[in-house]
Length: 640
Image (cartoon, rainbow, N blue to C red):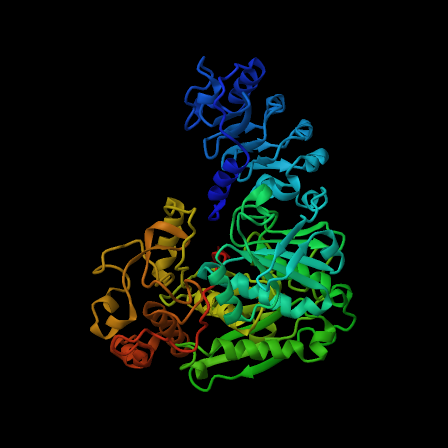
């Protein structure tokens, strides 16, 4: 769960309750309701059920607090609550605050909950709730400011959430420039879309902050407004100056009106948080409802109305092959470039060809690709799509789609058909097909086809990814998905916090492809003398590269290891580390020169000399991206 959430909850508890020293009057109604809640949510299995359903005063029951001798709050956060939300909660008519977050509650929110008009916060985030939000729930005391604690990380009907009456909050707060910032219906009416952006300067959130800066630059003149805030004024001012942030900002504090319902946070206690309202003050987008990485595409769809409505009519250039580069040595290594969601007009005006050319130049900015560019055949095949955008009712030639998080895909068989026009069917088994999606999103997934022979990362691959927000993002994702996964069959070197040990079935899958030269940059072995890259660990010539055996890779935290803390395969930053460069070097030479070529480690080290940092100077590692990006979706292995 994203940071600060629980801190915000605890602070909110303190702000909406008060200590009561008067003797407790045992209230039979409240006691009976609490017992019913206990039974409905599996109380016998709770992590802590101290004093529940006993004769002790109910304020001594775990998580129960009183105000004026009535139950006013329930704090059963992360307590193994299982079941459906009980109607008995309505019987606690003095209840002001509920925190049932991070449990295993399923079903929907009962319509009767709308009767609790006194309720300031219904905290049921991070459960398995689904269905629609009851209409009357939007009228409870704090709903306009705390709805995020209800909807976040559940499974509610997404379209209902955008149509259930969530309105823009009303604030008046002093901005960093000393002038008042008025947030509410009047501000929304002046703009097509108004973004309320709770941001910070943490490196882990840098890419999204950059995304917001570019969105604002792109659409501010067309009706996009952003109001930002953070709790660290000094850091915020520094970032504003360093990055040229031009939207208005204020410093969150307990004195701001935002704190009346929710301390420093809106709509819930996480950084970053982004919420967008339309000109009528209705909720248009929130990362409480869907991934914030979807915001650029959502705004693009609204502002680029011409692109949304355009339909191709001329398919005469569909399938046209362009040879961008012919190998000057060896047998030629095939890379085929395709584009999806490019209409006939984007092909006619040169946009398509420009994207293809940029992709080639980006690919060969990093090593070993840069040094061995002359061994590749690069083709572009024109693909005419009916529409230029993705979404319901839109038709693109390669049928690309966006899944959960950064997951993307398309119709591989159609991609292979187009690629065959360039290189023929007989060369598809070792081909890398790169599919660039006409979108500003950050995403990417490589579909790697199961190998049949060789020890050099054999097998075809289709790497899908959007063009991203800028050229650096375009290059970073291309290097990771196409250059890392697709060509060299490298593994991810990052891990997700919520994935612990790699499962046995995935270990078995790894073992089946590793003899073919897959995943040379990760290992389940932790002994430096036995790990796959041990030759580099014992070589003083690589002492300054920061190589080691670091736990956490292939999306799992434990039981699998990577060779470096940073690389293109971990954060899409810098360059490939030495084991990855070796894997790429190996496959390039085997494909270019066939089985007659034999690997010579000293020859590789001699080539690789310019990629190693000198003395104690940190490695710059070529011309790779410098920003660190969030993890991309793990590759998908496809059996033919």
